[in-house]
Length: 185
Image (cartoon, rainbow, N blue to C red; front, side, top):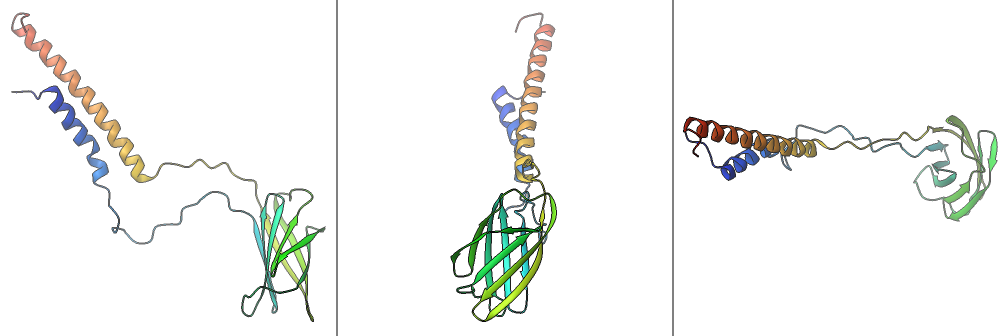
């Protein structure tokens, strides 16, 4: 039985070790719609609607971005006045542009669900909107490698282990052959 040379054995081990990554499906091959991946904790937000208006608020730390649109056509409400109350505390609001407002909370919101009420005055229209904002502590999420990356890492590890096993086997085979030949190599 003839053994492979060390370079040939290492090349073979590398090819066999990386084979699992080659077996992965490429672009255009799928098994239906993939489940949505969680990107981490979502930024808290609320929505409050009525027959006249739609208000969306996005909370980033203590900064609150507010977007006010007409319910009928989603166009920004021009020249509106907006008052916000969150969890019983009035929050001062500043108009940024038509339908866009910003506010700064005096203190971070408590974890959990807080009621939100908004009073909108736009021309002759006045409305009271109600909603809730759900705030949770930011979970520390550690991104895990994707399946393709896992396969590449596993393939590389298998290649290294196979190369080490082959090198060990070759060394052992040479030592055994040398012993059979009486110590001469």
